[in-house]
Image (cartoon, rainbow, N blue to C red):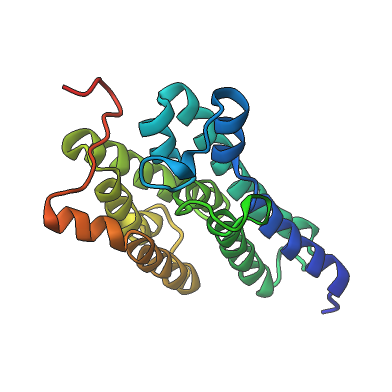
Length: 211
């Protein structure tokens, strides 16, 4: 199998650049005159945008961040690697990770971004639509009950491998990848976990106003 190295390199760079689109920073500055990284938790992500700027700002941020994750994985079709080959899945995995790295360390925003959860959600649609829908539904239920976005993210991420297997994506490589994604979420949310244990984690009200 011949691989066009130039095509492959361009898709890898493209995935990182897509992930680097700092929607939270650009929307905050363009429409509200606010750099969300200077407020709240300091993260350029949906949750901090919701806390600082409100739900109207958070919704497009989430949509753009999810879309860029999906688009990054979809670039695998331009990589020159045949989609029926064994290497195609590995290309998609690397593209997903590069998009998340781009979101966390965006070249367009001084390498200071968010935690990559929304980007991961979008990217996972390129691997297991059913699995990520179930994981996202779990996230919503957990956040609605606990008011903690971090708990919802960690719960949904932990259950993703099981949901994917339930939906028929039981390839061992995917199971390993999804398990690593769960570990990555625990790593990126380590400060949230510390605040949860200390009883100092901020609450988020997705479906109502703070009482």
